Amino acid sequence: MRTLLVPLLMALFIGCSDGSKSTEKRVENPVCAECRMPIHGPAESAKAIVDGKTYHFDDPGCMVLWLQKHPASGVRLEVYTRDTHRWIDATKAHYSLTDTTPMGYGFGAYEKPAKGRIPYESMRMRMLQGLTLKDPKIRKRLLGE
Image (cartoon, rainbow, N blue to C red; front, side):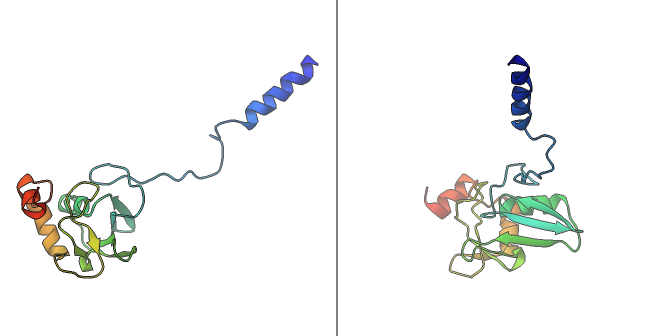
């Protein structure tokens, strides 16, 4: 009886292994190329495609900061929009100043223009100048807090 039990237990443990030898690919959430925070889906995110390599960002503001440090020609920028829930050219998007975003900058991306939304270049300049919801004076002026 004991001779049957040992092989049976070994087979059971081998069958319940952690799968480290598995050929199955594990999908991991990307992290922001700028702030290293995990990205949990497309909402609020942005990406830069440079020479076939994609850099992911958890917030459009992080994309702007990263581009300042890593200038590249021929870069393609995309943001995931709040209104149409799809990826679009970031330079053609319209940005809110007061949305709740992962890094707290306030720049939610939208495909359709609306009152109070600004174009990409204005958002980029505000981000580089630090004129975001992270600045208490800006926050108070825009949100009344």
